[in-house]
Length: 373
Figure 1: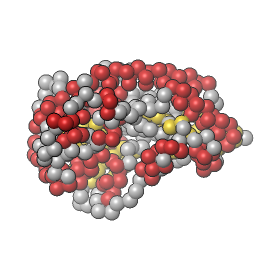
Figure 2: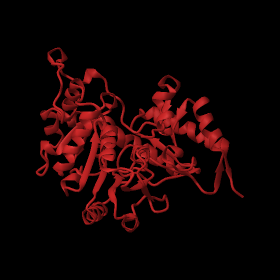
Figure 3: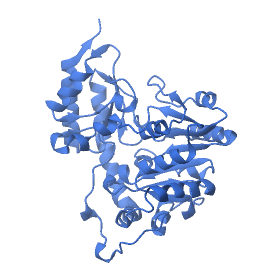
Figure 4: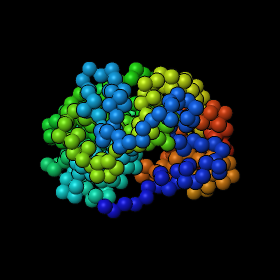
């Protein structure tokens, strides 16, 4: 394994220090909750080795409502990041091949690189609305392709891919005999549309990954999961989990179960907050001259860029934004794109923080954006 730290982690709010940030537009989740929202008597919780797959009631809560999925199709992990790690390291090696879209969440690129897995990157373009070119994915598949990897809703743009696109990609995976990973971390933040079933319901070739981090504001308990109907693969993923961590924290699993069993209590107010912030964000983009965006359809992030008629010294821009205005966004290099792109999170900040942060961004753009003659 050849690990390297990712810029998105090096420059994350928690690494920079929350106390130095007043307007946090870099977060990709809703506001963090506190334990006072969790009505559990922890005094009676036995601190034993938990079931290796995850406690049964939590796995039931994860697949609740599905007519297809059962608890044996669910493996609970320490966060979605661990889920993505064990999927990559179980399915891929230096002699295999990966097809992955970009921009993407860093782990979906960096873990395959760490194990020296050859990959073909299918680039998504701003001009095409970050749509996935299914034909380009098909052309990228090689005889040793073991995995096709996407995020949906897309991180960092907030694009929600159509079921036609997803089904076409599933068909490619089935034809190749490989697996299709759908990182569905933002699925519960479909604040404008009806929540769809996990994509893993559709085929044994599909792997769905999600967590309570983004939608419930509980990244601190590190609870995620893998869903797949391929029991041979699930056995291998369990083996990987057991060798890395054996089981999860029983405290964290109990909290995750509580969140999922009281889902609407948490999700409904989060959606209301997101819709309010999103309405302001749309007005802001319509009124300011420097940035253009592909309007997000789901999740809590968007990925605008500086308009092509402007040139910006991005080093000065981001430095002034942080050091002078105590404001941060996610620069494009977090996603292996140019720094004239930026990810803006609109689910985490209170509305006054969003208004203030966007105002600060506007002020910095006015200072450093120069119109090209």
